Image 1 (cartoon, rainbow, N blue to C red):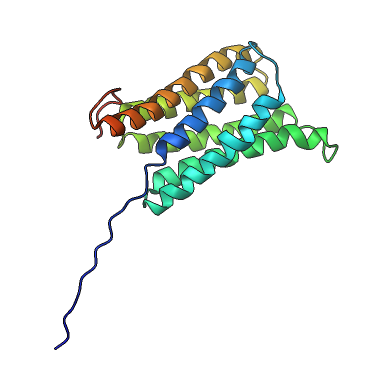
Image 2 (cartoon, one colour):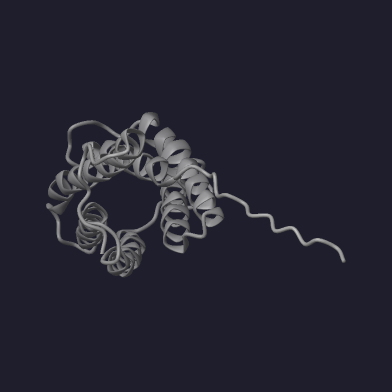
Length: 194
């Protein structure tokens, strides 16, 4: 009689969430420095949008798929492509391929991202407080920016400061995950996991 062997595979893929959170957070802070009127639009922001906010988050999302994390896959991949589409909306008119988006179309674009983020926020209620704050402030940011493009002038600078807060919360959450894992204890709290 043949002997049966059982092979068990250990998951050894690193946690991609800190990469995704840091890519999102740093890019969000820099863009919102511009929205708050602290710096000008520059290739630095566009480069961050393509490579760190965009590609790094897509990579993090793909790794989340390997870890069987549907929420992480959906969030990081979607926001990575958000950054890539935002850069495209800025660059396509500069190349003369199409006119710049109207305020109405930008309000619709940002409003849809606000709805999407609000729906993901409900998913964070099963996660930790830090992610709830990131997704909560991001939902507010998208709706503020959509409202500005819909005719509520003057919201841009306020939205910029709110976006800086959102980005800093994402940076904190990403670094907390790195340090907590590295030290094997809570160095930076992220709140209880539901």
